[in-house]
Figure 1 (cartoon, helix red, strand yellow):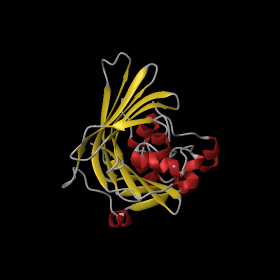
Figure 2 (cartoon, rainbow, N blue to C red):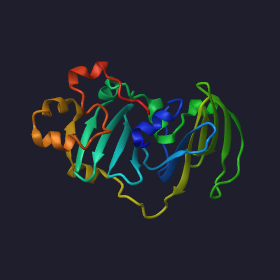
Figure 3 (cartoon, rainbow, N blue to C red):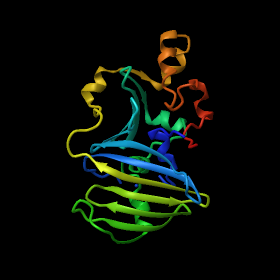
Figure 4 (cartoon, one colour):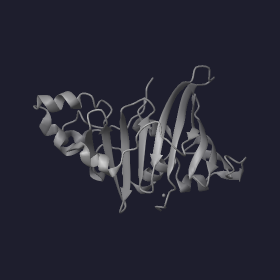
Length: 240
């Protein structure tokens, strides 16, 4: 099984005010398995986070999801690095696709858990991580048994485990990069060099053979194979 970084976050049971987040470049591993857990499906992905931007990328993929939160608005860019192309989604596009564009969604993307969710769980001190204090949170989120190790200084979980009736999902940070990154982080300058297309214009490109060719490679871009007039009836944000 293979999950994109965008779909991965739908595995979390819940998606609160905007805050300044510390920069974070890290590699995560998500595993999912049926109970009893004998053959977990694992996937590694990268989070490259700035104050108002987070880039999510499969460890071995040549594409990434770029989310930006500015002026109470969430925008999304689907990046194809090999082709130097980008598909731009507005917050309206996201809502029409059923993905949502709220502040709590931004927190779920950038922190993997919202402040309100943490506040609903029981808290106790945890063991230090790289000389930083941690907190253990435990309880239920949307009816799902949850145990979470939180690093307040980084505003990110070291590990979070969700126990569903028939399967378990675990997300853990396996490495924090403080020097050279395994991939190049997408910068504003790099974005300017890419060829951009607005998501709402994709439906008008279906008769352009050149456009159809590169769009065919954007298999996990939300809604790219849906015509604009179908948006209101389409719900793309789905997990396996």
